[in-house]
Length: 331
Image (cartoon, rainbow, N blue to C red):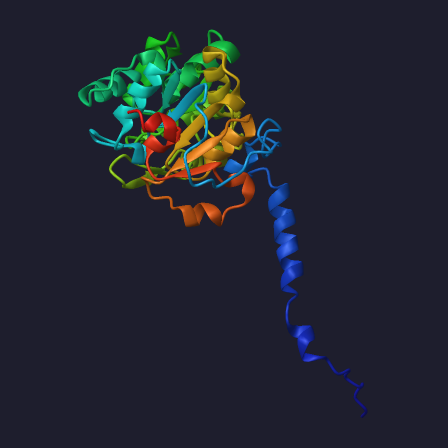
């Protein structure tokens, strides 16, 4: 009996084509109805506004001019408890003397303007609540313009909820009457809150909005906590509905609100922060020059390693360096 000839098989034929398999998985994931939001999806197509494309980056000396307005991120490294950045009081006094408007900004949902005003006052810095922008300030304006009369379930902290209510937003704890779910950073998020948000979205058709899409939140004491992105991802997965709007950086809603108020050209203002990432991208997309103050965890070397679109225009040792040398010498 003659057996058929068995063809020889090259050993590599038994090894799966990894690239092909990865492509099949990637295609499957892209077609899935359970895709979830990533922070990069909610970003402007324009990486750097044409207003500031010609500005230098990573200038490690004070600007040679006084800007028409100053926007200062007060989170994390800018304050820790009541220990504000060195020389901050001197800067604010100088800006007052120069008659330059400024705004303090916080992305922490549980921080209220009144708290920051009191904190500043304890340090001898007198500001008003109108000079402080918080997530509740921004969310209140957005909701009044885009969802007038909507009933809102707040998946966030008590202070955030109370601030929205104080600003005229109708808040509710009933999923069946909720038109909109807004997620803010809070360390008190629990399954009851998640369940109400889920039913409001899945059963009542409520839209989903977030105050930010940060995976991790750096706290004023230097510690890190899960941010809002994990909560948004969980709600999207459970409801199979996508996030409607991100109000946080790198989206530019915050800057639009500020510049509507102060009536100054963005390119004639300076955005000041102590961290790299979304805030600098937000400012540069809107056309605001940026200054990285090296009093936080970010370093000049880290900034240099970034792409040009993510680099600050200035990298400064202290916040006092946002003022020109000829101004500082007079203080």
